[in-house]
Length: 297
Ligand code: MN
Image (tube, rainbow, N blue to C red; front, side, top):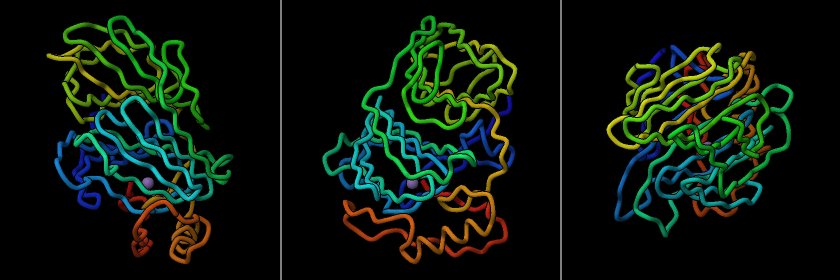
């Protein structure tokens, strides 16, 4: 297994741990961005307050383990993400959104922020937002899985996807083995979220991404010292080269520059009318190495 350690990044005061993209591995299937945040406890303030910003060429997936986050967007959507619920935003050619800890909150925050690259055939579709209040559950031996996107062990999530893709949260009781079926044509990643566990006899460290190449029928997970929650991602290897800069997934520098200009000049992405406050300005586009730039959330 290839192992990626997290990189600490500051996101407007919220410290996140970034697992994708990294130089040794930029994607797992169409999954092209993965941030972990929390677990945090707070008694005042709102640790998450990401002002309106634009996206194109991707889907954003907000998946919480504790706490809550409000999504607002330029389609006038407003939805609270909570544990077990999925906020899925499909940017298509362009959308803007904000993400905040709500004023009434549990004082906790722990979660995962992911992006999915859209394939060329759909990356200029109209934008959409979907809130799924519950996700299907499937038993895998002694383990339980919540299926965010795609299909696992015969159970499918009804969520918009545009390439063959899997996202699931596994709950693995202490000390037991679970044979998790995998698709041979997918590459996969395992990320323990709270308690270390084992995969095929190797120790899987918390907040580290463990990459599995295509060609596997299963992975045998063994629980650690307490119930482990493990993020399982998978997908068919994404065969279109992408460029990522700030919040954009594109194919060429010209597209990135056009998206930046459109945001700065108030075109294409719309306004997040439900957000009280200023929107985020785009950083300067130095243009030299857009792939290496620092994406937002
Ligand atoms: Mn965002």
